[in-house]
Length: 138
Image (tube, rainbow, N blue to C red; front, top):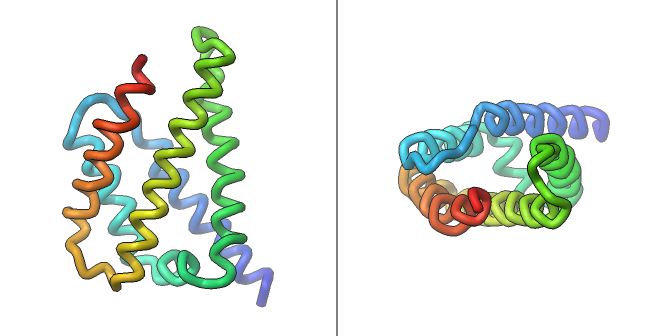
């Protein structure tokens, strides 16, 4: 059974990364909202992800996800134009985005996704466009 759970976690993380890799943020509210709406819909439709966010196993899943996110951030921040300090700041900004997104999804699933996915996507979009994107672009 542990191997099956691990495989389900890996598949869920892979699905999320495929969504992330298709997302190239610019100051475009609709693009960002469509990305976050896809994440919300995926979470709502994926009972495994919703349940793992609230289970004792959730910390193991989040640790695996964070390791993959680190790999993702390392890959996309390999630009020759970035200084070491900028790369470090960029990785922290991505980590902040991941943390806030997971926190919002945790709260939303704890409330049985009562709020419409569009509202949650709006919140995540606002946080990203106003809180993170301006620092990534500088």
